[in-house]
Each structure stands twice: as C-alpha cells, then as structure tokens.
Length: 435
Image (tube, rainbow, N blue to C red):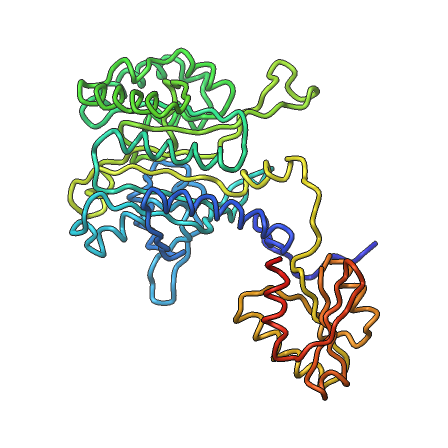
C-alpha cells in the first residue's frame, strides 16, 4: 500500500493540473470574447475584503454569511473575509473609484476564485471559480434581459444542450413587505412541518424559506402564496417588459414563482439557468432528468446605496466554471491531433545547443511555433519525439552544421532533406509553412 503524502490540498480545494487547464482556458475564452462584444470591461477585485462588506451587502440572514464565509483577523485587528461572491466587491469598487462619474451604465466582468465553507460534493467545492457580469447605473428592464441573454449565449457557444432559463420577480421595498406578511402567516400555521433552518428563517427572512432545498419544505412551499400575484404596478410593468425583451431575442424561459435566490440584495428580476441531465435509472426513477444550475443572478437596485453610494439601478449574474467543465468532460472526445507544432528542432552537442537556443528565439520573434528537446543528446530519441508529435519538418543541427553555419531540413512526410544556411532557416520555414 502506497504511503499517503504528508501534505495534501485542503478539503474542498484542488490543484488544477495541466490536463485540466485547457477546459478552463476554453470556458474563459468564450466568456471573455462574448463579454467584450457587449462592451464589458474586466475588473479584478482583491480576494480578501472587509468582513462587513459581505455581512452588510450579501445579507446577515443568508447562508453565505451565517455558515459559509472564511473569516480571519489580521495582526492589526482588521476582520477580513475570503470573497464568497463578486457583487459586493464590484459595487464597493464602483463607489470607491467614483465610477458614477463615468458614462452610465458601467459594464464590468470578473473571472476568478471564490471561497465558501460548505459540504463538499460533486460539482461543489470550497474554492471554486466564477465568471461574473455586472451592469451598474441602469434601471431599464432591457439590461435585465440582456444579462440573461449573454449567459444563455455563453452556454450555447460552449455547445451545451437542454438549457432552461427560470425567471421570477421578487418585487421591491414597496410591495415585498405585504407579501412577507402573507408568507409568515402561511408558514406559521405549518411551522412544525418545516426544517429547523426554515423555522428560524420565518422570523429572520421568510423569503429564504422559498429557497430551501429540503424535500419536506419544498412540499409546503409549493402551496405558498406567490409574490408575482402581489407585485406593485411598477414591479409588474418592469417584469412584463423583461419577459417581452426575452421573447424578442428568442431566449426560452420558464416562470418559477418561488424562485428568490439566496441573497438579500436582490430586487425585481431574479433568474437561474439550468441544464437538464438524465438521472441514473436506479437513483430517482420517477425523475428522469436532473436539473443542474449553471448560472444565476438578478437585479439589485438598493445595493449601491446600502454600501454607501447613491441610489443606483444595477443587475448582474455569474456562471459556475467547475460545473460547466464537468459537463464538457462528459462530451464525446474528438480524435486528438498530437502535434503542437509543425517544426521540431533537433540538435547534437553543446555548440549546436547554443546555436539552437539562438535560432529558437528567432522563431519566437517571428511567431512560428517550434518544439525542441534540448535536454536530450540522443538524435534517435529526438527524431522519435518529432515523429510522435506529428512534426512535418525536423531541423537537424549537429556539431558539423554548427561549425559550418548550416542546418538540415528534413521533410518528415517524404523523407527528403536539404542543407541550407543557418541564417536563412526562419525565412525558409515560413515559406514552406505557407504552401
């Protein structure tokens, strides 16, 4: 039995090894290319923020703040937290750097790690990555629809099928207080059937009960009053226009009257985007499909003011990178092309190595990709590697060639070879690659 390593990555956190990097790069590239098209600019907030930013911004009654934050106290007595989400950090930066003076709205995106202390399971980690979008400084419902459209486009660009958008409106401080009273009255009469967390939520924030994933609570929630039936005129008009914009751009959606999201700052529009996967027959036979949340977000018109800025309309959302990657890995793999370059540089001897290093730099400046194995002295081993990676041409530089200032070009496809002047190697290879 092999001995367990003394040091391992912390629970819920993992190394992203080289074979997995290509998946992250693919998702990041798609997210960034699409966000650039819609004129979003990148912002990278610090990984550590003041704890109060999240307790006040995310909400003191949320599971994130109550159960999941990684908090620490510095030697100077400051209380800091590893960011569990992006939005409060982005809003803090918007206020701190006077972005209200820029042309509005300000459109920002972020990509990076987040941290939440929770039970680790498939697709859920304590360090995970998100792609985040925020549009700050706009109240028009068209931006709600556009944020949803962008996330929908990203998932489609990644070739993910069976994507479902669920959407709801949770009103604002005009219509929500009355609805909360209705909820409390409904849940109070059924309190004994709720889980312990939901019994607490009735007192602290009854909307959180709607977000509970416990089966016994979901049965009770399914019969609860619906907020959409109690929206004020302004919220009703806003939500109606969001749905009309989504219809116009042909983003399919499903109304979910009990969707509230788990964060306190949301107002009006909230959404989640799911993918439906077939469930194993033995696990849940009565439910042939499993819903996996890939993206979520909503409008948060009160957050900028709550964190010390002026009253400002805003909407945003985020995509979970690890969940998307787990789905990409399940897709049938295309036949691999092993080579990473059409040229391999083989050398023999120290003088050839020195000349080879200089030649490799000339290829780099000319933006021509070349593979090499300077650490190997066996020409046979180097030619074997050139063949393995599928190189079309191998450049042979031995002691004789290094002294004479020449280099041998071997056509690996036809077995022909030619000796040319070393200083003409880059020009000659560029010409051959264009053919």
